[in-house]
Image (cartoon, rainbow, N blue to C red; front, side, top):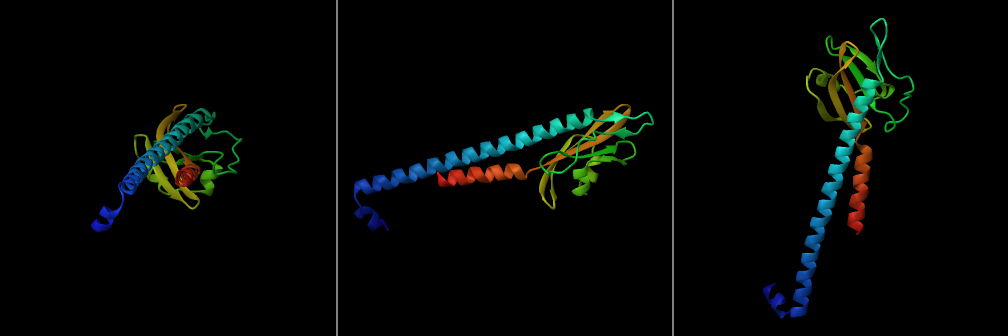
Length: 170
């Protein structure tokens, strides 16, 4: 191999070195873009979950008999349209409310997060893909509750795959 390398012209050797350097720089550039896009998608999903949490807390009301009720407009038709939502009583651990999407896609692991006193963000598997779940304590009227909201990670993974394809083609 050393003999082959020495027998080549200086022009060829410089061209090969420049090509290797260019490939290395492009690989670092593509890797940086991938990391930035992945971080931004993850942050956007977390922010959306926090917004869903606020929305769920504000869209509830305590009835005169002490029961809690939520918005009636959620049909739960699409996995990506409305958030997955469950509300648990903090004192007794009883399930108070479950959205139509939560009924269709139960996450048994979510029940263990109810007992945690702090805000928890986890990724949980479901039959239709991975969901990121936010579980946090809250108050509705006088009642302490734990609200859990979740959204599918699949749209973000689809965007990330698209970015990888574009970077590979470029």
